[in-house]
Amino acid sequence: AYYLRYPEEFRKFMPDCRSADFDTCTPETITNAYDNGLLYTDHILAEVIDTLSAHGDRLDTAMIYMSDHGESLGENGLYLHGAPYMFAPTQQTHVPFVLWISPGLQQSTRIEKPCLAAKADVPHSHDNLFHSVLGLMQVKTQVHDPALNIFAACRDGVSS
Image (cartoon, rainbow, N blue to C red; front, side, top):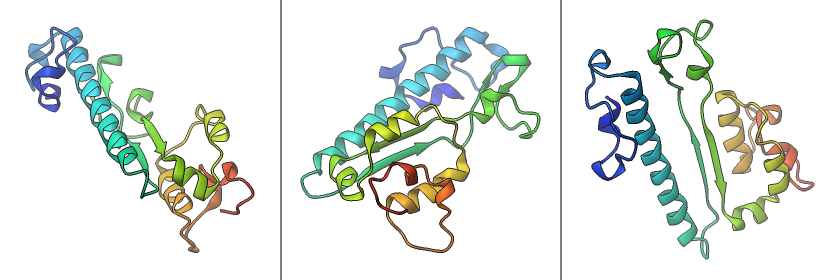
Protein backbone atom coordinates (compact mmCIF):
# COMPACT_ATOMS: atom_id res chain seq x y z
CA ALA A 1 0.00 0.00 0.00
CA TYR A 2 2.43 2.62 -1.23
CA TYR A 3 -0.26 5.31 -0.96
CA LEU A 4 -0.17 4.98 2.83
CA ARG A 5 3.50 6.00 2.89
CA TYR A 6 2.99 9.69 2.11
CA PRO A 7 0.61 12.47 3.12
CA GLU A 8 -1.77 14.13 0.68
CA GLU A 9 0.54 17.08 0.01
CA PHE A 10 3.11 14.67 -1.45
CA ARG A 11 0.75 13.31 -4.10
CA LYS A 12 2.74 14.89 -6.94
CA PHE A 13 2.87 11.94 -9.34
CA MET A 14 -0.69 11.38 -10.48
CA PRO A 15 -2.77 9.39 -10.88
CA ASP A 16 -1.53 7.19 -8.07
CA CYS A 17 -2.68 3.74 -7.00
CA ARG A 18 -4.91 4.18 -3.94
CA SER A 19 -5.19 0.50 -3.09
CA ALA A 20 -3.13 -2.26 -1.49
CA ASP A 21 -4.50 -4.59 -4.17
CA PHE A 22 -2.26 -3.99 -7.17
CA ASP A 23 -4.64 -5.97 -9.40
CA THR A 24 -6.95 -2.94 -9.28
CA CYS A 25 -4.22 -0.52 -10.43
CA THR A 26 -2.29 0.08 -13.62
CA PRO A 27 1.51 -0.20 -13.67
CA GLU A 28 1.72 3.59 -14.13
CA THR A 29 -0.37 4.34 -11.02
CA ILE A 30 1.64 1.84 -8.96
CA THR A 31 4.88 3.52 -10.02
CA ASN A 32 3.40 6.96 -9.31
CA ALA A 33 2.41 5.91 -5.78
CA TYR A 34 5.88 4.47 -5.22
CA ASP A 35 7.51 7.66 -6.53
CA ASN A 36 5.33 9.76 -4.20
CA GLY A 37 6.64 7.64 -1.32
CA LEU A 38 10.21 8.31 -2.45
CA LEU A 39 9.47 12.02 -2.67
CA TYR A 40 8.24 11.96 0.92
CA THR A 41 11.24 9.93 2.07
CA ASP A 42 13.54 12.52 0.46
CA HIS A 43 11.63 15.23 2.33
CA ILE A 44 12.09 13.43 5.67
CA LEU A 45 15.82 12.92 5.03
CA ALA A 46 16.17 16.63 4.21
CA GLU A 47 14.41 17.49 7.47
CA VAL A 48 16.79 15.24 9.41
CA ILE A 49 19.79 16.93 7.77
CA ASP A 50 18.34 20.39 8.50
CA THR A 51 17.80 19.43 12.15
CA LEU A 52 21.33 18.07 12.48
CA SER A 53 22.78 21.13 10.74
CA ALA A 54 20.94 23.43 13.14
CA HIS A 55 22.97 21.92 15.98
CA GLY A 56 26.31 22.06 14.16
CA ASP A 57 27.59 24.77 16.47
CA ARG A 58 27.58 22.29 19.39
CA LEU A 59 27.44 18.78 17.93
CA ASP A 60 29.32 16.79 15.32
CA THR A 61 26.65 14.76 13.54
CA ALA A 62 26.02 12.44 10.64
CA MET A 63 23.08 10.78 8.94
CA ILE A 64 23.28 7.43 7.21
CA TYR A 65 20.24 6.12 5.41
CA MET A 66 20.28 2.66 3.87
CA SER A 67 17.14 0.95 2.71
CA ASP A 68 16.68 -2.64 3.80
CA HIS A 69 15.56 -3.75 0.32
CA GLY A 70 14.64 -2.53 -3.13
CA GLU A 71 11.31 -2.86 -4.88
CA SER A 72 10.14 -4.44 -8.11
CA LEU A 73 7.61 -2.31 -9.95
CA GLY A 74 6.46 -4.76 -12.61
CA GLU A 75 9.80 -5.76 -14.11
CA ASN A 76 9.47 -9.35 -15.34
CA GLY A 77 5.96 -9.39 -13.87
CA LEU A 78 7.25 -8.93 -10.31
CA TYR A 79 5.98 -6.44 -7.76
CA LEU A 80 7.16 -5.54 -4.26
CA HIS A 81 10.14 -7.46 -2.82
CA GLY A 82 11.02 -10.68 -1.12
CA ALA A 83 12.34 -12.90 -3.90
CA PRO A 84 15.23 -15.11 -2.72
CA TYR A 85 18.46 -13.17 -3.20
CA MET A 86 19.85 -15.53 -5.81
CA PHE A 87 16.71 -15.04 -7.95
CA ALA A 88 15.83 -11.46 -7.06
CA PRO A 89 16.13 -8.88 -9.82
CA THR A 90 18.51 -5.97 -9.29
CA GLN A 91 15.55 -3.73 -8.47
CA GLN A 92 15.17 -5.69 -5.22
CA THR A 93 18.85 -5.98 -4.33
CA HIS A 94 20.20 -2.52 -5.19
CA VAL A 95 19.28 -0.09 -2.44
CA PRO A 96 19.91 3.57 -1.67
CA PHE A 97 22.74 4.42 0.67
CA VAL A 98 22.67 8.12 1.56
CA LEU A 99 25.31 9.77 3.72
CA TRP A 100 25.52 13.26 5.18
CA ILE A 101 28.32 14.30 7.52
CA SER A 102 28.45 17.63 9.33
CA PRO A 103 31.48 19.82 8.69
CA GLY A 104 32.48 19.40 12.34
CA LEU A 105 32.43 15.61 12.22
CA GLN A 106 34.17 15.63 8.87
CA GLN A 107 36.94 17.76 10.38
CA SER A 108 37.25 15.86 13.67
CA THR A 109 37.43 12.48 11.90
CA ARG A 110 39.59 13.89 9.09
CA ILE A 111 37.36 12.36 6.45
CA GLU A 112 38.14 13.75 3.02
CA LYS A 113 34.89 14.65 1.26
CA PRO A 114 36.39 14.57 -2.27
CA CYS A 115 37.60 11.02 -1.61
CA LEU A 116 34.09 9.92 -0.54
CA ALA A 117 32.56 11.67 -3.55
CA ALA A 118 34.98 9.87 -5.85
CA LYS A 119 33.83 6.54 -4.38
CA ALA A 120 30.10 7.31 -4.59
CA ASP A 121 29.61 5.03 -7.59
CA VAL A 122 31.44 2.09 -6.02
CA PRO A 123 28.92 -0.62 -5.10
CA HIS A 124 28.47 -1.20 -1.39
CA SER A 125 26.24 -3.55 0.54
CA HIS A 126 24.60 -3.96 3.91
CA ASP A 127 27.86 -5.65 4.95
CA ASN A 128 29.51 -2.21 4.85
CA LEU A 129 27.03 -0.49 7.15
CA PHE A 130 28.09 -1.94 10.52
CA HIS A 131 31.82 -1.54 9.89
CA SER A 132 31.40 1.95 8.44
CA VAL A 133 29.44 3.18 11.46
CA LEU A 134 32.13 1.78 13.77
CA GLY A 135 34.79 3.49 11.67
CA LEU A 136 32.95 6.79 11.45
CA MET A 137 32.44 6.88 15.20
CA GLN A 138 36.04 5.75 15.76
CA VAL A 139 34.99 2.76 17.84
CA LYS A 140 37.96 0.50 18.54
CA THR A 141 36.94 -3.16 18.59
CA GLN A 142 38.21 -6.43 17.20
CA VAL A 143 34.99 -6.96 15.25
CA HIS A 144 35.62 -3.86 13.10
CA ASP A 145 36.80 -4.86 9.63
CA PRO A 146 38.46 -1.83 7.97
CA ALA A 147 38.09 -3.52 4.57
CA LEU A 148 34.31 -3.12 4.94
CA ASN A 149 34.51 0.44 6.30
CA ILE A 150 33.72 2.89 3.49
CA PHE A 151 35.48 5.69 5.37
CA ALA A 152 38.77 3.86 5.95
CA ALA A 153 40.41 4.88 2.67
CA CYS A 154 39.19 8.49 2.94
CA ARG A 155 40.64 9.49 6.29
CA ASP A 156 43.54 11.88 6.12
CA GLY A 157 46.36 9.86 7.63
CA VAL A 158 44.22 8.34 10.38
CA SER A 159 44.18 4.58 10.69
CA SER A 160 40.68 3.17 10.88
